[in-house]
Structure formats: structure tokens, C-alpha cells
Image 1 (spheres, one colour):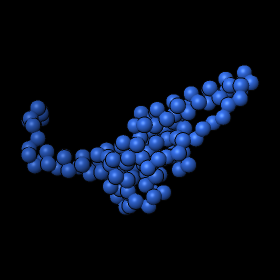
Image 2 (cartoon, rainbow, N blue to C red; image 1 turned 120 degrees about the vertical axis):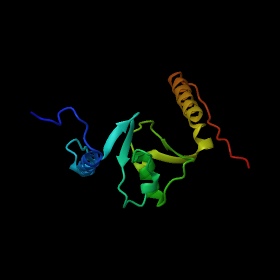
Image 3 (spheres, one colour; image 1 turned 30 degrees about the horizontal axis):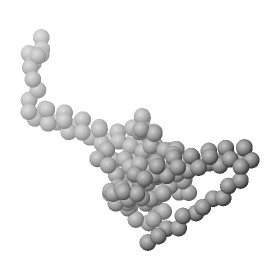
Length: 147
């Protein structure tokens, strides 16, 4: 008959068990984990990328160890990490299209006006199409930026 059945492990045994578990968890990180998917996943439509500590842009990562790929692409293009107030806009509106030609850098204030500009461009294109379909001549006026 087992005398120790139903008793709690000693403090020393618990420490050994915890150390063994921590070692196993460390060994299961990253590419060693059988569920590893290459350090990329999609979150709210954005591609999230895991950065290694050796990466010069490592400080851009969030608390979960991942950063949004479009921010990383722009940072590498500029050759410096991005500031937290810098916003990257996808020109075509597709969140996972992270080609440098599809990305624009803004500060927080500039990015808020983009939806209005896009709506105005769509409206102008629609009105131009209507005028063309009805054979009405028109002349586009270009506004100069006045400082």
C-alpha cells in the first residue's frame, strides 16, 4: 500500500517540477514548437510578424513580441524604427498589401483626413463619368497650395 497517496509534494519537489516545466516551455518556443507557423499571423486584417532579438527593429514589437508588417516594411525602407505617432496608410485600402509602393507615412493628424480625400476623389471621378456620358464639356481646375 502506498503511504504517500493523496499527499502534497514537498516544496523541494515542487521546485524541481516547476524548473522541469519551464525548461520544457523554453524548448518549445518558436520553430521548435510543432504548431509554429513561421512567426506570422493575421490580426484584424493586418499581417503580424514576430521579430527576433537580433533584428535592428526589435524595439518596434508589441508586448506580445509581434509587430504589424506594414510598419516594419516602412521602417526598413526608411532605415530607422518608426515613432509611435507615425501612421502607415495603405493607399488601396487592402490591409495585407504591404508593398512599399502601396504605403504612405503620416503623423497622427494627417491620417485622419485621408477618408475625406478618398471620398472626394471618388465623387469627382463619378461626376466626370456622368459628364462624359452626357457629352458635357468641362474644365478641371487645379487648386494651388497657398502658404
